[in-house]
Image 1 (cartoon, rainbow, N blue to C red):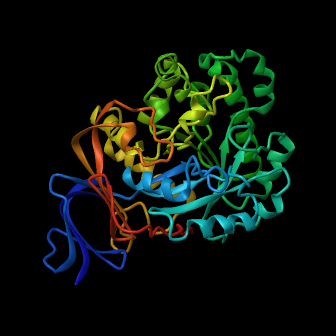
Image 2 (cartoon, helix red, strand yellow):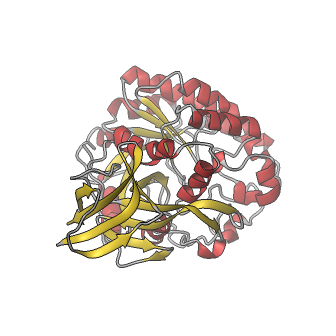
Length: 436
């Protein structure tokens, strides 16, 4: 007797949609065939639905330990599962930061039996923990090293070129980088206009992003180490990074592909404030060029929630960041329906490339022997995203009130249905991702 059969679905297998049944036992895919006649404990009928490999969000901030009034590992994982995300990479800029083996173990302990989705954590780089960074190869649940080259939320900052060099020299994993130049950020502070969030991209300028990214690539290439540049926001970086592939990969966020300045600041005010900023349409157009030409490697939400009471503060006292783990797939599926990218391209960005770049085991493909993680979507279903339906503790989304076509309708993790039609099901049973 099988644990689960997914029947009648249009399944994304080997780069194309195929009508198949999928049989699951003990959390593994054990049978993919035209028709499965065996008995099963649960049969999921995916008629007129599309069965995708479990989608992974490689950039989330769940704020635990430290700011659990805003988000925690439990609530963040509920938001993920509600949005069809089966696994997350979570960031180390917590309080205290996840920048020692002791704090890393604490994070794993906090996650156990509290997270609905599967998970991995970044190890935070500091100016003086390079000896620990050299020894992360076999650390359970560690997806990579996070380097803040420019200051953002939290106090993890490695701004000095010598220290950045040390991080790469000693890195035993992919180094994911928040790439802004701290010196330029400090110099540009005089350009901040109190009460005017339109000055955010002036302060955190294109030059600020590009200068840092140029430095990061130079150092990574010198040491022949892997760098993954997060939330790329400028046309200059797209041009530059597309000439430095190989060990260098990069991410774009759904929000940088969906809203642009000045409209977003007119409409959303500080709720559109993030680091690096949402910029004008010329950058938005170039980011779409990158997606269409397969230049970028991942789409990550940079889920970075803050409570409304803090976002409502006058700029620049308002914190930067917006929630996104629950809306990533809905927003991107709408872009697929609008023919901005193909479903194949999206699957590369949220399933296949994360597996390749970070070396995740047994995920990202619908394949016999692989883990039974699925994101089941209805490409024709229209939904209006509303603040009321956001599972994150922050209780808001920049996409509130907007209609999207195409959305996840079920999330299956380790062979168990964890979300169906927007309802979270069962207990939190997520486990740490395993890496090659």
